[in-house]
Amino acid sequence: MIKPKNATVALALACVLAAAGCIKTAKSSGEMQPQRTRITSALPDNAFMANLTPADPPANMRAGEQKTVTVRVKNASQVAWPADSPADGKGAFTITLRDRWLSADGNKVVNDVDGGTPMVYDLLPGGELDLPLKIAAPKEKGNYVLEFDMVQEQVSFFREKGSTPARINVKVE
Image 1 (cartoon, rainbow, N blue to C red):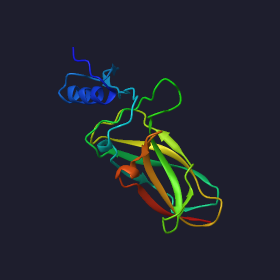
Image 2: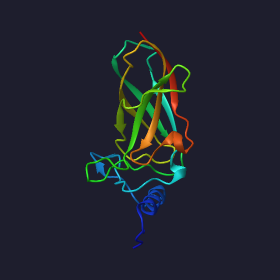
Image 3: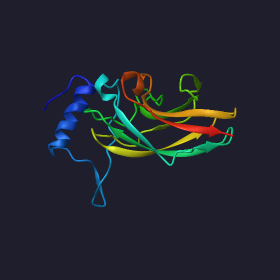
């Protein structure tokens, strides 16, 4: 049996074996169940590529209003994204969908501690999943840019590694 020396090699090997049909996800009631692979280290730099598409994003919100926006997340890299965080309960290395609010010109951060939703199952290259994300409009009225991005907790936002976040204009009344 092959014993990889680190989590990245193990994950890459698992993906190759899964693609070759050597590994199957657990079955229940005859249906394939999504897999949750434990993640214990930083992803390689080339894994930080995502396409994000908010479904029905708000064009207008009231100051301080909360809404849930569903965002379609696509793994645009050639590396699988594991979904299960370490057992330490601190969320280190977890891959999470996050948002932040920017000024109307997109140059100034207004609030970057808004919502976050971790992935619910592994996402293979080219795979997609829909994640609900609770957002809260800024308390001050005005025009803003709402940005959605993925982050590997305690490592990096995807935008910092070259991925393009999704942005929408929102008028807060």
